[in-house]
Amino acid sequence: RFTPAQPAEPRTGPRLDLGKCVNLSNMLDAPREGDWGRRFEDADVERIAGMGFDSIRLPARFSAHAMDVPPYTIALEFMDRVAHIVDLATARGLNVIVDLHHYDEIMENPASHAERLAGLWRQIGERFANAPDSVSFEILNEPHNRLDASNLIATISPALAEIRRTNPTRIVVIDGPSWAGLPDMLEAPFPGDPYAVPTFHYYSPVNFGFPDADWESPRSRDWYGTQEDLALLEDDLEKVRGYIARTGRVPFMGEYGAWVTRPLAMREAYYETISEAFASIGVDSCAWGYANTFDLWNSKKGEWEGDIARRIAAPVRD
Image (tube, rainbow, N blue to C red; front, side, top):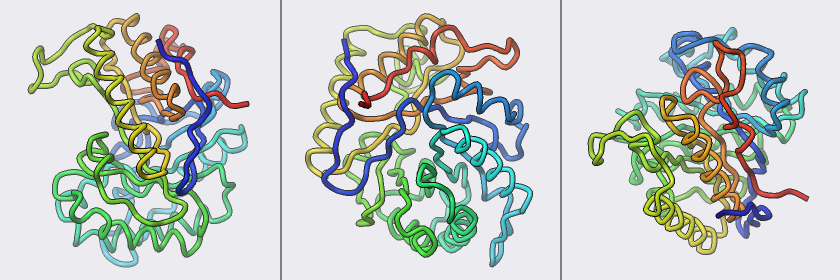
């Protein structure tokens, strides 16, 4: 139904060329690595590259490993751990998004944590100032609760300024409010930074993408691919086309996925359909996730889950 096309070309800002991408899920974004499943293994990079992926998104909970008071020093052990993964991935030819993930406190009190967010990015920016251009930064994953469209730009702007002090042209990814949902990305204000790229997350239909959704009927289901599903997907594609035409910016889909207990054939169909659909309008996507949750790689069996990873698509590169 969908055929991957050439990457969409922005009129404003850059595009983030990801190709085939996967999130290193529930590893460094856990409160402590290992709390939510197994730890990262160096062999993961080779498995990911060997499966044909071009990029990884690296969620990391910097806020759980940093001082609460100025200068908000990030523990060297954690910073070194992030850098180790970045170095391994870039040496293997993978693009990397360093994503500041699960900063829960800033969602409840944005104004009082904006300075700390900037302090964290001052250190991250300094650590990766000499990293290759294939490394990009994502300021803050999934703003929500009290961090909304009215205060998002003011809250993240000091952090963006700190990044620009040491990384003047590095691509910086900006999530919109309401958990980086597509509807809010379409309408939310966006920084005027010339090297910023918008992103959105996509788990539609949510009663298939997530374990359950109390507001849906049924709250949970094991099937995907009905005419209604595809019509909703087509409508969302049209909205993203409109956003590109209106703003000139090309976003990417930073997360999408199907809950791990759904039938394997349905999960295979979902990842293929969603990635191909957005690739058909020239938009890259990054699957959630590699292991520990929404598994594409089965750590217990030591193998990829069916053909999910093989069937993930990306825009066509020459």
